[in-house]
Image 1 (cartoon, rainbow, N blue to C red):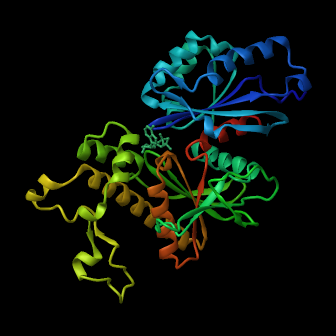
Image 2: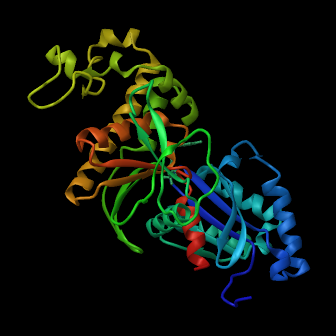
Image 3: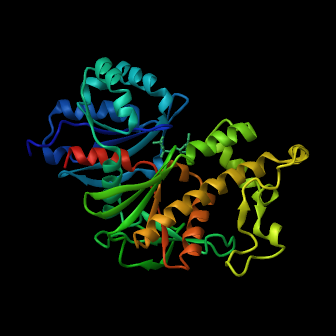
Length: 383
Ligand code: ADP
């Protein structure tokens, strides 16, 4: 067994502006590696708490559907578990880790995101351990590449994204190195054989937005960004619709119709704006139909939530498209938790890339949406 392998168990922690993402690597090859009884016992204690539960307290959630089995990291085989909780609960989380006695056990906690700096003192002082800190964008890219290279069904795109009858998800092969099982929610017959290659654009939509150009392994640049991202969407829904959670905002938006509050090209021209190539249903002015005070009375929260969602998605789409165009890149991978349970945003982004590039640029999506930073910082330590 290599001396470079850090002590088990391994945790990757991405402490973001809104959500903290925790990835736990559970080794499943103890026998092969002749782990000591002590190591096996520690694993069992953590497993008992983390893996047996799906919810922790009122806010921590394990995304069971994202669990990855048979993952090979630095020669060890195991299962990756994905857990998230609001970053505002970080101090509570540190206390929980302390009270459960996980701290002495988990000597290898890799941390990234702004919170890895902000909470370093509390975590290290309270738990008596050192966080292995990693850069968040480096972690993001290595997490994306690690998962996408190892799990063939990770990436997908939308065919006919805004056509409710004919829209379908199609798996996009990043790498043909390994084929895992197929998922019936996807269409398989139309799989692309060659995967996402360099260069590609990554658009990470978390609380805020970062757009990166990736030229090769460990070669990337943050070229653009926006503060109008997931945090803005939830803030708008909180103000406009009294929505208390992201899930409620998405539910409202799903029931709403932004055409009731947004001014479309068709509302201004009576038709499409043909010489410019703008269809009649393009949003010309977000919330442009409710400028009069009398409009407020009959404005539905559902329509406002939908408008906020479409506005954020279109705005990000425009930034990402311009980056791709400027750098002559055809593939844009959209990640981040704004895309969680949010196919409306993903389909708008897919449509925008398609429409503005006349079909030459493709929006790609990844199943593990917001967890790449946490995976990537884990991967980095054991590299
Ligand atoms: P960050 O690292 O900045 O926290 P994330 O990629 O975790 O970024 O995305 C945070 C965004 O994800 C939020 O601003 C919100 O729009 C969205 N989101 C999705 N699920 C949730 C949730 N359960 N709670 C809060 N925000 C959520």
